[in-house]
Length: 317
Ligand code: CP
Ligand code: NVA
Image (cartoon, rainbow, N blue to C red; front, side, top):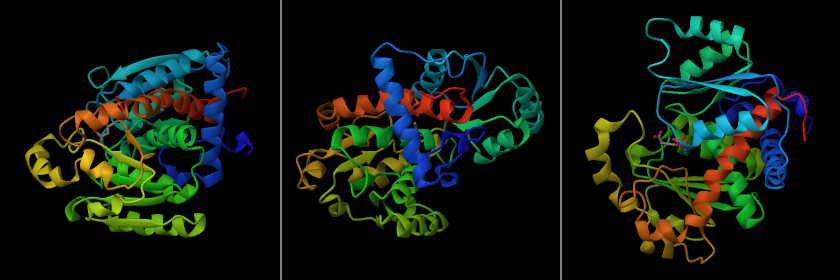
C-alpha cells in the first residue's frame, strides 16, 4: 500500500477508507510500536504543529495524540472546551480557517459529527476525529491491532459487540468489521440497535469483504465469539438517559454467565474504556481480561501515531 495516497487526507470515519488503507494504518502502527519498544523514535512530524481540540473529556485519546506528536517531533497544543470559542462566540468555519493557517493538523473530539466535517473542509489541513456522537474511528484501529496481536488474524474472526448498539463505538466497529471481514454481531435491545441506513451501508461492505452482519436482541448469539466487546451504557452527553439505560441494558451485562455462553475459553474481552464496572461489565470479568483491555488502551497511542504519520508525516519507518 502506497502511503502517498493517505498523505494530506483527513480521518473522520472509517467509511472514507478502503480495506487496504485500514490494514495499512494497522501495519504502520505495528512498525511504530516495535520501534518504540526498541527505543527508536522518529522525526516524521518534525516541525509540525498539531491542535488538539476537546469539547468532551478524554484520557486515552488526548494522551495518545500528545505522545504520538512528541515521539515523532511535533508540537501538540491542547485546546479544551473553555479555552476557545468554537461554535459559541466564533463560528466553527472561522476557527477552522484560523487554525488551518497556524497548524499542520487538527484533532477534534466533540459532539456533532458535522463539526469535525466543517473543520476538515475549512481548515484545509488533515483533521482527525478523536470521537464524535456518531463515530470513534481511531478506537477501532487500536481494537483491531489488539485482536491481531492476541488472535493472530482479523479476517474471519467472530466479533460480538454487546450493549448500547447505536453509539459511536458500536457504529465504528460495525463499519470496521464489515470492511475488513470480521463476522460482526451487534447484540442490543431493539431501541438501541444501529440505524437502518448505517446497517444497509455495512451490509454492502460485508458483501465485498466476505463478512457477515447480524443485529439481534438475543444474548445467546454470543455463542462461538472470539471477541466480546462492550462499552459504557451512557455515553458522554447522554447523562439524562442514565436511569432508562440501566434498566434497558441490565440483561446485556458482560458477566461470567455471558462469557460462559460463548462456549469458548479463548474469547477476548475488549472495552474502549473508561469502564463503569458493575454496569456493562462485572469487576470480576474485567479483571480476568485486564491484560488484553490494557493492551488495547496502549494501542490507542501506536495507532493514533500511525494515523498522523501516514496522513501528515514526511518520512515513514
Ligand atoms: N477510549 C477512549 O476514547 O478513551 P478516552 O475517552 O479516555 O479518550
Ligand atoms: N461511547 C463512549 C465512548 C468513550 C470512549 C462515549 O461516547 O462516551
